[in-house]
Image (tube, rainbow, N blue to C red; front, side, top):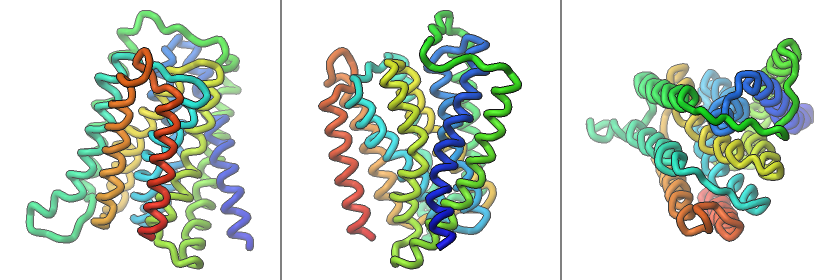
Length: 320
């Protein structure tokens, strides 16, 4: 019984931990007049991706590769379809030209890179699919390139346009305290969610991959959902979009890279279907932008995204 209580409490710790960590990090960022899009792509993305990071580090150390990979793939699909779908229902999401031409394609390239690395051994005649430590190091290298790109656009951005409604600027001491408390909440919450998810999988006969793709993925995507939804309510669209796209890139390059460096990740061939779903979701996002009014993801796009996500969940349950 205790493990189920901790499982539920784990999600609470994850959500609250991410919330106060983002608040503390964003407060520090606003002191330096960093633009909303850069904040969304970096500080907010990092904060809301910490649940995935903590869970994947724990899962990798414990040899639960299916949970680690399923968590990342499931979270990315949830980010693109569930979170953007719900956020678009709150208000249309106009997408800036730079995001369409650079950040979204970079996210798609990261997905293709992970798919190639996971299946590269097939070209060597080896049928044992896995993401090796060297693959993880390569993913981290591309993450460094992404961060260099973000640094460049932050340095060349002459019009940061800080948003008055994103929250107060706290003292440095309070901001650091928020960050430390947030990390602690994410660590303990992540440990409890992993333990509970594995126990649930064992009891009901679900695979670790299915639990990672559904229960854990949606749970660890709740910080992104809360952050993007609140940003949409406040009409801070750059934070909402940057959070989702940045989180997906963090998940694939940073978190999956670290997970593979800690412990090589055996890769089930069935996970290629989830990679194809990520590619499809990214493509759907790219196609939806010019179709929507004024290059925006409108409410009809949001409904379509949610319907596609529901169909994907049904497919996962049937795949079992």
